[in-house]
Amino acid sequence: MAEAHQARMQTVVEEMVQSLERDHIRKMQGRMFQCSADCCDRPSDSMSQVHQCIERCHTPLAKAQGLVTSELEKFQDRLARCTMHCNDKAKDLFDSGAKEPAVRSLLERCVGSCVDDHINLIPSMTRRLKENLDSIQQ
Image 1 (cartoon, helix red, strand yellow):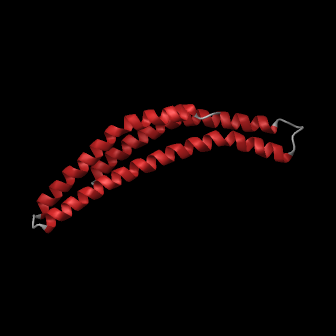
Image 2: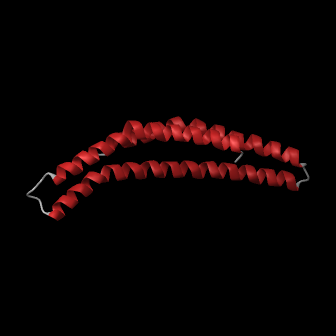
Image 3: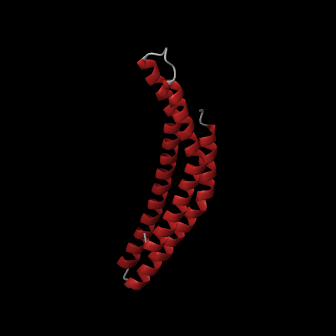
């Protein structure tokens, strides 16, 4: 992917991830640590019970992190498929005898279109992630 397109995509995705971390994940981390500390404040529990309690505290955050990672992987896979399609189109054009500037131009426009299309998907992906994060039981 051309550097400018890649930088633009990376900026948008980083802003989304930072927003999710700030508004959702960070709060879940706070609850996880508080819950874990509460587990340690139960003197009558055995060591095993305390460890099980702490594991239960970590479960929601682990689910949330897995959810975000999975969604980002799917997004990245879709973007990669789109850019591979562009590479195939460029190769076909080059193989048909087109000159390098025409091939580069086609590739640049096609990759730019992929990036634009995928940037337009970010708001709905963010909304879906926020809804799913809010639904995770604490």
